Every structure is written in C-alpha cells, then in structure tokens.
Image (cartoon, rainbow, N blue to C red):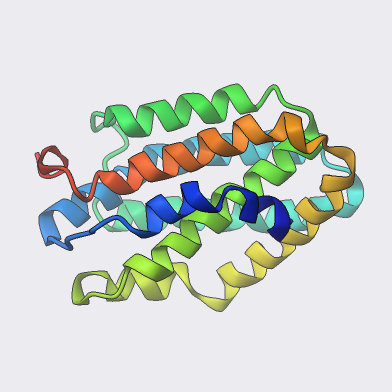
Length: 191
C-alpha cells in the first residue's frame, strides 16, 4: 500500500509544501466546508458497507461511526448543512459519487487513501494555536485505530486491484485534496 502511495509522492508533496497561513476566519470557513464533504463520505462508506464481505464489516462500521461522530462534531463547531458549498468541495463530492461505481476492492483502496492523505497533510500543516483543538480531535487514538483497520483492508484489497486502473483515481483524489487545502490560501475562503 505504501509503495503505491509513494508513486504519487510528487503530487502529495505539492500538498505538503503549500504555504498555509493560519487565519482564524479562513480556518473556520475551511473547517465548516468540511461538513458537506464528510456527509458525502458517509454515503460513500455506507455503499462500501453494503458490499463488504463479513470480515470487513466491523472495520467499516467503526469508520461509519467515526464519520457520524465527525458530522456531529462539525455541527457543534457551527457547520450549517444548508450553507452554500464551495465549488472545490462540490467537485470533491461529485468525485466521491463517481467513485461509487468502482469495484469494491478499488473503493476500499481509494477510501483509505483519502483518509491517509488528509491526516498526513493535517499533521504537517496543523501546528498553530488556531488548530490545537482540531489537531487533538483528528489525531485521537480512536481515529488512528480506524485508520489502521482501513489500511489493513486496503492492503488486502490491493491483490484484487490492477494498479494501472487505480492510478487515475488516486491522482484525482490527490488533486482534490490539494485543491481543498488551497482553500486555506485563498482570500475567497473567508468570504
């Protein structure tokens, strides 16, 4: 699994090299714009669970539980489910919807990749006072355990996935992650 992700290292490096400027208003906007994406992620995960073999169900149930808790947490932070969705987030939501047509093993790998890339980028970028509470939330041991289980599922699924067919979807996920992180650079993000 790691070898496949390393192949896309330059794209991932673009995310890590972004000159994030932590501004409370911009960060709050970015955080609250996560709500519609996480709602779409919940639907994506529910689709995975519907097709999951018995051995995968508990791990996916834990991922779904974590996503429901994330939605509740975002609402507690002030997220408004009826707020307009930024075009970047909307594009990522549309990508998630498109990926639902992929075979289960491919979606398993893509699901883990989304989670891993986000968390790795978060650990690199979130080192400011504004992000302390959120950093503790997203790096909690419970979330790390879910991520570990998703990695195990993804590694098992890799034997059933042709890497050359997976590549374009991985690139698109990395591009959407890049564009999502760029919202922290944009002046319009605070609008």
